[in-house]
Length: 514
Image (cartoon, rainbow, N blue to C red):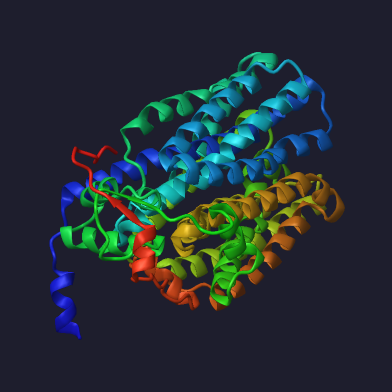
């Protein structure tokens, strides 16, 4: 067995192909920078919005969390769009929508106009968080898929850090300008993204779904480690798409399913899934739920308020501490990026969640002690709060943060991948909205320390779920991962009737445009 596997293990990789896949993943993943920037910049901008527009805590909570609700709509629209016009064009849509939303928020003259900008921005965020990981997973070779797909979380963290830096840089402007510049300048990265996307190829799996085999073959030749892997990946994708293996050509006319393609996808994934598909869906929804229910958005969005509760005073000190948190969050995401394909998904996920649990207990303890002694500064409690926040975001970035999008983009079969990821992203955004829109009210009801103890309990449940329900997917081709959940190979009929349905059109001219 070992000797048989040796030749495949020592096959030399094409470095130029890895660079090409790397560049594609980098460009696509930049779409998620818009989500990170919004989350980061709102943590500081909210301080000035509240003062300038004279809004209440309830209005502030709604403004902070409502973007996640709007992203729910955007993720479903993104799934439909990406299956219709392709993954690459959908990234352009995401950038254009976020560009518009950023300008609306930057020029907002009142709370109502600001909320309109939040709506448009939320739709763009939904598009971005759905399409970027799906595209990256579909274009990446199995050997580097975890590394490349984790770029989406890297850019979310880069966006958060840029948001914090924007807060610090523009905080000294007049009150009516400061928060508007912070929000409006978010249009810049989305404009750059829209220009960069046109240099990307389309996803080979989407091309196969549309019958464009020559185009898919050209992309796979450029993104696979070896020519043999490119042929194998194409055969696996064809089987997943229902194309008989011996049928080949530049373009094939795909047979339409009875009842419509979209209805069949909804039926297969939601309304009457088989046990394996049900387990895949539960795994995806579970990891998205626990990523947000453990309080990550509360720590990031309300970090100035958390640090203030810990005893740090003054806007400059609060925003400086928040920037330090952003730096830690961004640096530690690199640990996951380089270890996902070496250590694997499960070890990082379990270690990350256990670390977050310990930090949440520490943060809850420190904040409770500080809250009970409002007139006295207790150095060890303040230090415990600061260390716990920094360690929490570090543990989050080494596992649960990046793994959510990586894992969800891997586990769904090709025919339901876009919708499946949209459902996962929707669960993520709904949970995020519930957490971020309830944090201030929850803190008043059970104290801010009690809130983090609650998140710690949820983190403990998450660790149990991950340990018992999440299998390892490292190094497996996308088309093979379903077997871990009990999914059987899709049988492709080879008889004459089926072949008559699939018409092969040989292209006389060059049809390998990307």
